[in-house]
Each structure stands twice: as structure tokens, then as C-alpha cells.
Length: 186
Image (cartoon, rainbow, N blue to C red):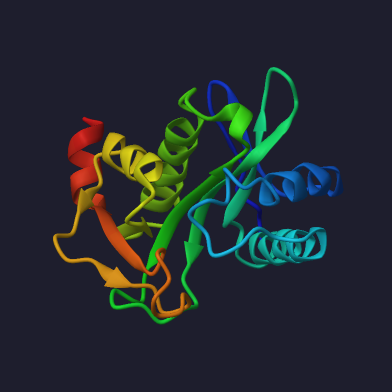
């Protein structure tokens, strides 16, 4: 399988490397970065997640790519596409997602990388639709989804992997169809 890697003006969306693991573990242990997830990750959990993501990219050629800032060469997080393996009210689907180190927030990196991921999804993979979802409390990610012209569904849903009673259980769903994306790209 040929691995798809993408270059933007400021970023590389690429396959994972061993040198990414320490920075990824730090990102996953940051309480601000992980504020909208059920818990922070240990180094072992973080390494396991990176290995799983790398394996998916190796198998299918795409996934949650490691995100490298070109100017510095630093690993800053991940962005990409993922075929959901959790049964959701909107399954089956491909989601777009991102997670960046706090030092790189507010600079447009998530939006820039996500736009590149949409191009792969709609041009290379010919997907009909890409979704994104997050906890209702995660306004920063919702703002990125809105900048990407994704449309929010009116109804919310409870994430099946988050226990009842937890503040992060209620989620919102955003969608972008290939047709809408094409009309925006013109």
C-alpha cells in the first residue's frame, strides 16, 4: 500500500516516526490538551495509540497523520482521517480529527492541516462525506469545524464510550459532503 503524505504551506502530514513518541506522550499528558477527553494518557497508552495509528496508515495508506511544522521540523500533533470502529448513531463513517500541542494552538495549524485532509478524503479516496464530533464543552474544536464550513447537526448524541453522568458524554456532530466541499473550493 502506498502511503499518502501531504504537504501544506507550513506543515507535513506524514507517517509516524519513533522520534515523535516523546512529544506525543507530552501532548497526551497535558491537562489542557486533554481537557475534553475522559483522561490523560500515560506514556504507555500514548505509545500504544501512536503504534495503532501508524499501523492503520501502513495498511490503508492514510489515517491520523503525524503533523510536523516544516520550518522547525517539530512534531506538533496529528491531523487526519479515521474510519470509525465504534458504533455511533451516524456509522459507518470517516471522521476528521486533530490534536495539537498547546504551544501550536491559535495559529491556524489545525485548520490548514484539516483542509489538506479533506482534499485527500474527497479527491484521493472519493468519500461522499466526512464527519467530525466533539464534546459539547469543546468550543475550540467546534470553531475549527465551523471555519472548515462543516455543518452542525441540530441534535446532540451521547458518546457510547463515555459513561453516563460524565460531563463529556454529550457530543455534537458536524458534517461536510463532497458536493458541498466542491462548491466551496470553486
